[in-house]
View 1 (cartoon, rainbow, N blue to C red):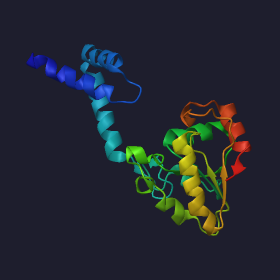
View 2: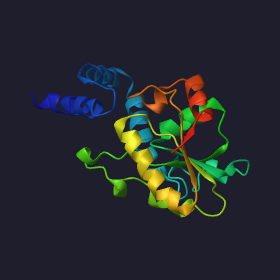
View 3: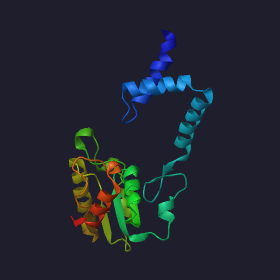
View 4: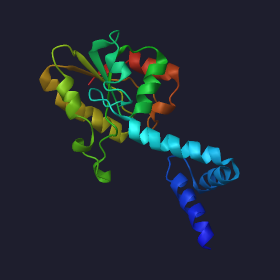
Length: 197
């Protein structure tokens, strides 16, 4: 039975990934075992490399290899607007619309007090530090869930005293949906129809 321990450990490790259940984890495990050894080595090296080389952008909290990230370094970006998203996939979803040319800020989560996620667990301090003379509008593009709405209202309360206009993307994204899974047209309409908070 001792030989099965590494297999069970790998199945367990795969099953901890989002969207991967026990069956898919087992399928991935047996794929790795049946594949050429170079596949496992490449996977292991890629995981190690991404953990060593990728870090948070010191400006917007995007995941990057170079700090500041490419988006923050882009001089063609409009510094008057900052779009606040909960995750990097949410940022990429908005980028795919081609409708937004401002800057971003990634929170890496949403307020969820019942899960132990409060304001101090989100990257809100770096956002507030960015709200100087140049920034005119903060667009809150969090998912339209209870947590997303609570986070949007919290951001509004933080930004409003600083004289910054705070808007929320319009409802075009279904309630309870994650931004990263919304189609480009829906996200483009949501951005175009954003409203004052």
